[in-house]
Image 1 (cartoon, rainbow, N blue to C red):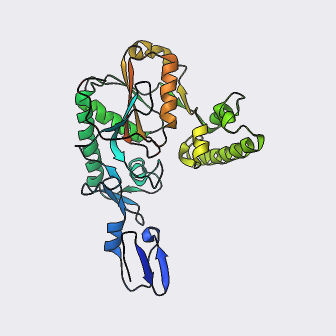
Image 2: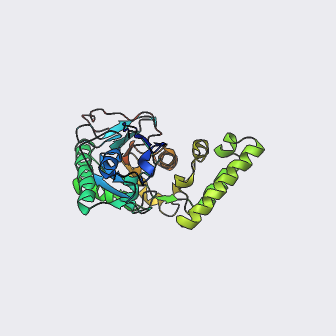
Image 3: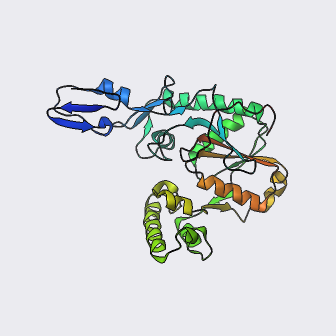
Length: 314
């Protein structure tokens, strides 16, 4: 039997590749210790794919950096002076925008923290990095994206705990339903139609979107999520999934115009939703600046890197 870092095994005349998703039987050896070594999630934590547990492990940073020294990381890829800071920097993304850490935080797909101590350790490390961020960026008006649910609320509370001057706005943004997104994509002048500018391609893309919408109706109360959109071209063609709530947007004019605004979202994958949010805010308000804070940076974004926080308020 031969082990390598990629875990290729030859046993009983059978070549087995990528044992991470396979339980070995009838081999005479229980590989628990080795599997635990190999099943290291690249977010400074370990995970057990069979038990669907997540545990905090600061001893490795192979796929993400959770260190206080190097975080938050940032990208200015969004342009127009918008900086996106990430509490933890994700380097690889085997689970797209819904990896086991996010699953455990949200309590989804049977993933959970191995112990309460592990959950506390993740929040504790995040709080340290948020405190470092808040020491430089004097957080004022903070707008919470509707996409993150309980995770966004938890990290918004951490932000409020370390900066008593922060004012949290939770009702400004409205998440669209899957049907509303389909209607938006169907409009004659939509970006979706420009991407799929041939009838056959448009029909295939729309059929794929409608199939995903059925899953959203069954599992997400009908609200749109990119979780069920697997094709990158289709993801990028969908540009309108969040909008300002018409019933409340006028009351926040004085709080947002000419102010430094912070937007928080739990995780950014390709940046579609956060770009949508930034555009919506800019269409109606005139903030002095916009900064974004996320728990996990997006593997689909190019520019995330480590750098010292600015010495002055952005």
